[in-house]
Length: 285
Image 1 (cartoon, helix red, strand yellow):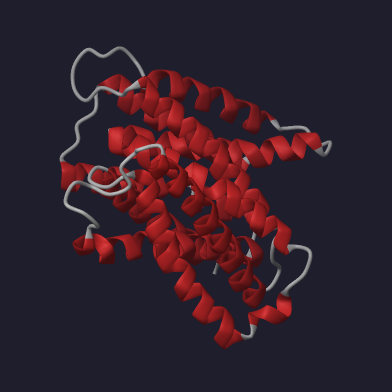
Image 2 (cartoon, rainbow, N blue to C red):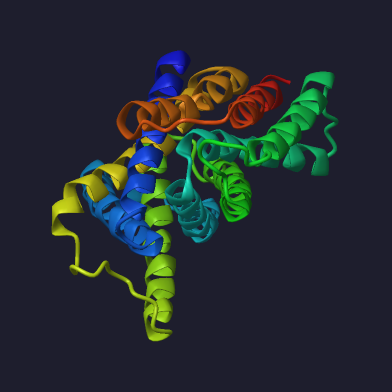
C-alpha cells in the first residue's frame, strides 16, 4: 500500500510540474497557480460536502492554512524556474526541500545520521554543478537556480505542515481544501496587486481558454499528489514513502526529454543526478 501510493505521488507530482512549467511559458506563473488551484478548490469543496469532512474541523487546520500561504510562493517560484529551464535540471533541484523536515528534527533535538549528513553534502554539490560552466547545450540561468531553491524550501515547509493538519482520510480532504482556499486567496491578492502595478496577468491573446483542461489537470494532480503522499506515509514507514515519492523529478525530466527534446550538458546532468541522490540519502537517513 505504501509503495503504491508513494509511486502514484511521484507520477502525479512529476506530471503536474511538467504541465505547470509548460503552461508558464505562455501564461504568467501567478495566473497559472491561481487558476489551477481554484479548479482544485472547487473539486475539493464538493468532496468535503459529500463526505461530511467538516466534522473533522479543529485547531490542526491552522497547519493547513499556513501551508496554504507558503504553497503559492513555492509554486510560483518553481513554475517560473521550470519555464526558464531546462526542466531536467530544475526539477531534481526542487527535491532538496526534503532538508526542511530534517531541519525541524534538528530543532526538536534530533541529530542526523551519517546518511543524512552525506545527503546534505551531495545535494549541495548537485546544486553547484547544476549551474556549472556554460560551455554548450542548454544554459541554466542563475535566476532559475535561485527560484528553484526558494521553491524547494517552500515545498518542504508545506509537506511538514500538511502532515500535521490531518490524521484521517476525511480530515485530509478538509485539510487540503482549507490549504487550497488559502492558496487561492493569497494568490488572488498577489495577482490583483501585480495587475495594479501594471504587470500583465494574461497573455496577449487574453485568457487561455484552450489551456483550461491543462490548468485543471495541473491543479488536481498537485492536490492528488499531496493526498497520496500523506496516505502513503500513514500506511507504512515514512522513509519508504519519502524515497519513492521523491522520484517525481524523473517523471518531469523524462517528459521534458521526450516531449521538449531537452538536452543537458554533462555537468548539468551530473549535478541534477547528485541532487536527486542527495535527496534520497536524506530521506533514508
